[in-house]
Image (tube, rainbow, N blue to C red; front, side, top):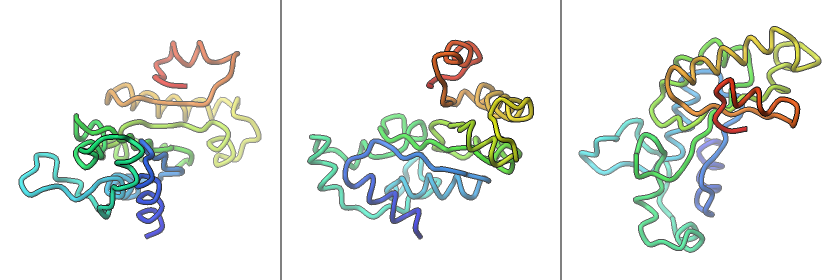
Length: 170
């Protein structure tokens, strides 16, 4: 209920997407997608996962400056015309273990890896631990295999390497 309420509030004021932290399994990823979507019209090709978001787009219409907000306010790539991005954050060992199921949830627009949270969740003081990097590469490999954009925090020392590895935004 909290996720649904918070996502609705963020999107109703005009946000173009939501980052969902610490997603551990497909059920949590699906709830994130459902919370981001309005219920679809009967017969829609992209009916599932069914949207749960209540319809009150007046603020977002004003912020976006468009009259067809309802048509644009769906998650990409599930809806190719959708302009909302649901970014799923993989920050726990459970999330890494379940990456294949999580990434397969329709509407997952991007996967974000937080190295600092990832290392802490794994019990390491630094994100440079080899085990942390192995987990990062597991998630990245799944993203590349499924053609889902993968994001990671970086700095001037690592940005070029991360882009060469296949991260699509840093």
